[in-house]
Amino acid sequence: MEHDPALFFHDFRINYGITYRAKTTSFFYQHDCPPVHDCSILFDFSNLNVCICCLLQVLECYIISIDLFILSLLSAIWIMLPAYLPNPVAALSGGGMPIDFGKNFTDGKRVFGDGKTYRGLCIGILAGIGIGLAQIWVSGVYGWENLPQHTYLSITLLATGALLGDLGKSFFKRRLGKERGSKWPIADMYDLVAGALILLLIFDPAWLYANMTLTIFILILILTPILHRGINIIGYHFRVKEVPW
Ligand code: CTP
Ligand code: MG
Image 1: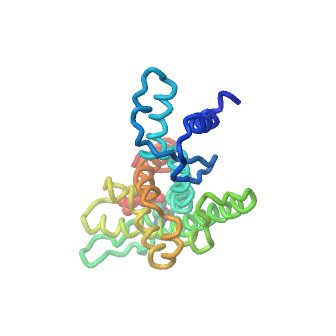
Image 2 (image 1 turned 135 degrees about the vertical axis):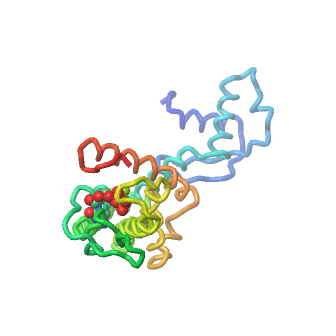
Image 3 (image 1 turned 90 degrees about the vertical axis):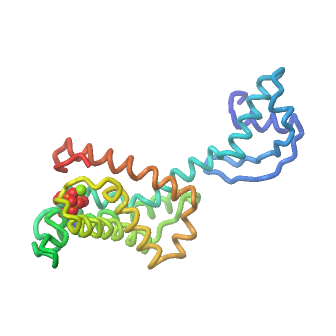
């Protein structure tokens, strides 16, 4: 018990009689933030334990709440799973009739190109909805109330929006004269985020406002390129994707 950092933290606060102020609810435990105007404690090098503990408190309560950060990270992944899955599944299952039926746009270039097919679109969206249904089920069974609660509408909008974003990106890519599969760094990574969030904003803004915080949004922006690149490299090695981006 002595080695439980949360308990040590708690004991420390009680011993020093610091009044409790802000309260954060976390995924793992609840903790209270004491005020830290007493800087003498922070710089009390004669008692290193107390000093380090104070620094940790400042870091945790006032700069980033570590547990709140972890919860936001899990929430970001939880929200975006139905949007992240459709792309790799489309790459695995795509083929057959292109969405533009092989037709050209007014500029003489393909509307979307051969990389956008009905099979990829439909199976990708179904996969996103499938994982969303699994999330709804799991969170109901295990009572994961601290995570954003998906609805049938939210998962459908996320999955559909992800691939519509991808489709929209390909449309503009063709207009710019970029070949199918060529690199277009920022757009290739954020098309799915833009598509998914725009669809949510239009058709279920209440859900978006209730579940999206600034921290979660920033984490999505950081996570997406990392996951996107990671999954595409794996896809490339398994010959599912022709290029590693
Ligand atoms: N795919 C599909 N249908 C979709 C989206 C993707 O069939 N609606 C498949 C295609 O086989 C595509 C692969 O998934 O080649 C990878 O998708 P993506 O990287 O988005 O397409 P690219 O081939 O790179 O084409 P683009 O340049 O238009 O992005
Ligand atoms: Mg591509």
